[in-house]
Length: 100
Image (cartoon, rainbow, N blue to C red; front, side):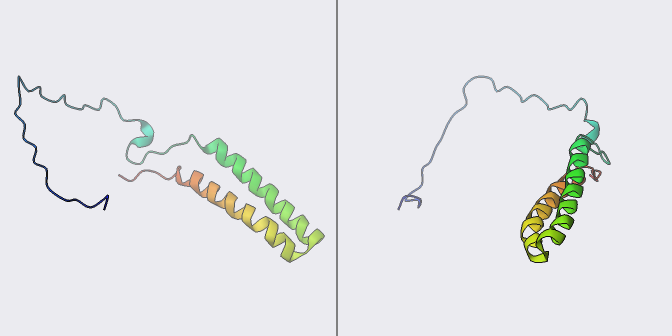
């Protein structure tokens, strides 16, 4: 069997020369969006475009309801509306402040 062990391998090594200490990791500054209660406003433009697209889809669904009937409009408009809802919720969640 390829992924089952069939024995134990023992490895032993001796250090040669001087051991260098690890450099300490120092954070000089934390970006504003990563600080506690910080928000990221970089997605506001995309959020505005997605909300406009949602308005257009709802308008088209309303027109489709009168033109095609309720069942056909559901088949066409529901997946698009759910997809836009997922994208909008992802953008809104980036505006929620960091709690820790």
